[in-house]
Image (cartoon, rainbow, N blue to C red; front, side, top):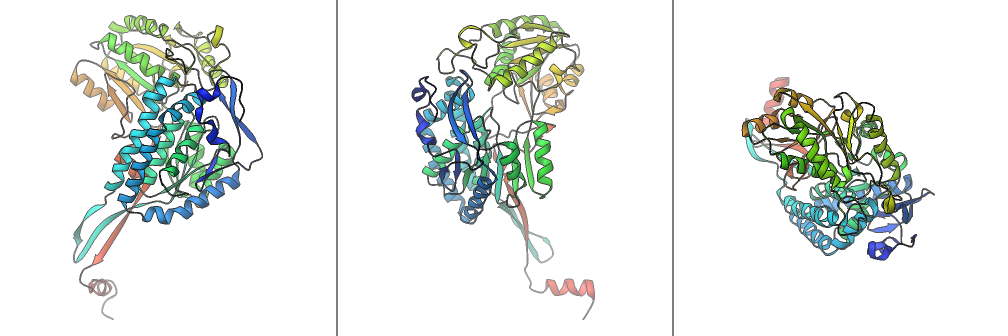
Length: 511
């Protein structure tokens, strides 16, 4: 463990838990076998807080073998037994909530108030939800659909699930992938992002301490090229679940096709924020700031394109810019901080590149720079509002993944909805109007997996999350996620013991 000299024990009290390495296989932490190391860096300071040995293909093989060995026992457990284990898991997570909140803030740069109030409680709630949902994995009722035969449908787990989670919400994405899979009776090997493995490892440790059997949850922390691709292509992995960019998602699908395994993809987004001229301007401006700056804009459902009907356009730009200028950047562990850094200096420079290029064809109303002073060593970037960009420009069409909101005007309702749909993505959107008919039309015609009305960003465990178009397919959270992690079997009984003979006679005649 590398201690850079900042008050790491206060910021990261659970650091002692990682002394044995960053791979969690068959119920214990081990060191990776790739021969290479990687550092977890605090993006607020640029300082290393933990250095670990990366996983190699041998670690992936060991994790898959552990998951495969655990599958018969875990899939054979009753729904009540799996439910009880998940309830205990939720209780352990609640007991360790502060450890999770601090570790997440440290590795991601999220304000501690965000991880305490959103990331960690949301994960505990997800766990409690799937603890209950585990007892409701139903097929269809039996019935006679063909002569003297009775048919019914069994819903069964798939096997070993290989999951890959991103760095923007490492704890929640680990939970979204692991919980429905194990509630349905599968076992899991999860590869978190190399930048942010800490809370995934804490999550697996908590599951083991809650009594979930060894091998049900395994974590391999390695590179996407080595550990990730080997996991996706592994012949003993029955399904791959991936969250990340659309480009990498295409590569995951390509590898998975070779072994004809099921895939679940939650990919990029470019969420439209459509403000009609009867909307509450103050509510919409506040919603735009919250929706675009959540997690420093590193959220695939974040509001990124605000389309504002022309009578409200200039007032919306002015009010939103003023609210952005009041957002307080600072130390993620300081109580007054609203916005933390981006995940890395590389990501900050990428975001700055989009804004700098946009100056040639659009108006940067506020922001558009990294702060100086005490924050200059961190990966910080000021909240940025860009106006009047062409619809076909990169700042409108490409996923920036930073604290940048682009605002464009529209005239008619038809035009606003058409502009909202005019990107390859379709993960999330919002519509702002006091008119229920107008809002309902928007929810029907905007092509996205989630459309909020007069709000942007809230999610709940009981409802599904997933995209349309280039944003992928399949659902996280809710009972709908069980469709991803189970397979359907038709069972048919001959009730007469003579039907097979009759069928033979029909096909082949009397013999």
